[in-house]
Length: 77
Image (cartoon, rainbow, N blue to C red; front, side, top):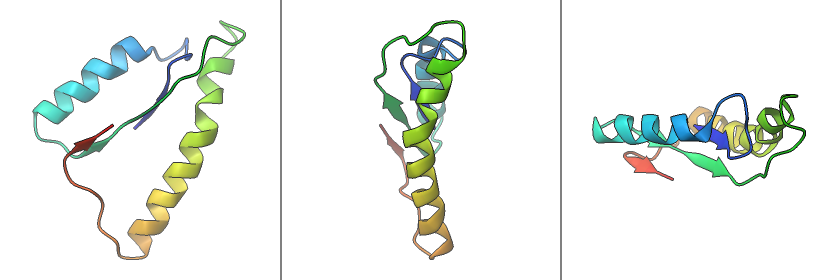
């Protein structure tokens, strides 16, 4: 899971507690927060900026799964 702190569409204040809840329930979660300040608020820019590093990490994660490497268990941030 990935979240930009500057995202004004999907607020980090809602994502953090959700991740904590999932982790407390025993789910395997890898959570990345990208510290990005507000950028052109109410335009979606803050939502999109976090996508770029998340896509790179997400594609790497998928490549590892298709290569037969197991994902990390537990919760990591």
